[in-house]
Amino acid sequence: MHRMRSMRAGVELSSVNSADLARLQAEGKDGDLRTALSGGRTHSLRSICSTEARVNAEEVASKLHLHIMGPFCLLTVLNHMDRANLAYASVQLNRDLGFSDSVYGFAASMFFVSYAIFQVPVQLAAQRVGLPRALGAIMVAWGVIAISFAGLTGRPLHLYMLRFLLGAAEAGGFPCMWGYLTR
Image (tube, rainbow, N blue to C red; front, side):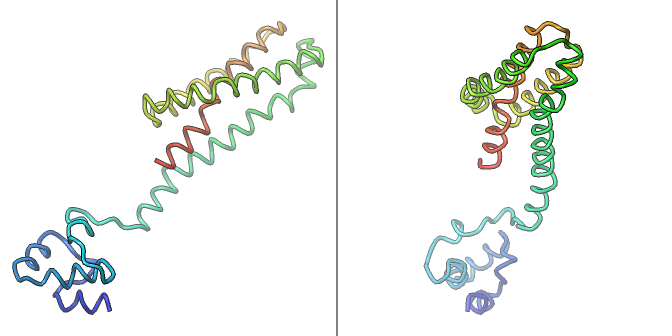
């Protein structure tokens, strides 16, 4: 029924542009199109459809999956690997650097303490500077801190500091990703 009304007006619903709008308004036939586009309710034609550009939903979805969801999934996997790496490396790490089980346990808890402390402040700062810019800064900081584990010495304080800084760097990662997806 909607298609029939729009066909009476001389234009198909999927191909409305500014030239068609001007022609229909000049001919006084924009009422049929306006009613068809709004599902039987009468609204302003300009409030119903954009005259400048039409959005193809499939194209938007494919770009979303390729350019946003792909990197976010990769970051999620890398994040999980980074969190779990200390657990996998604990036996070798404790033996090579001479750490006791209590040193290892305290270092593991330092990550989660700083993660909990910095999650809200990092998200508030990210809202202020912009989510894409903040997410980039978070990922760079995360990478630099993760690489610095290669230079870890036998001093427990170094391990504590690195785990604390890693938790602070990762704290805003997931909130920024979710905020970016929902804005």
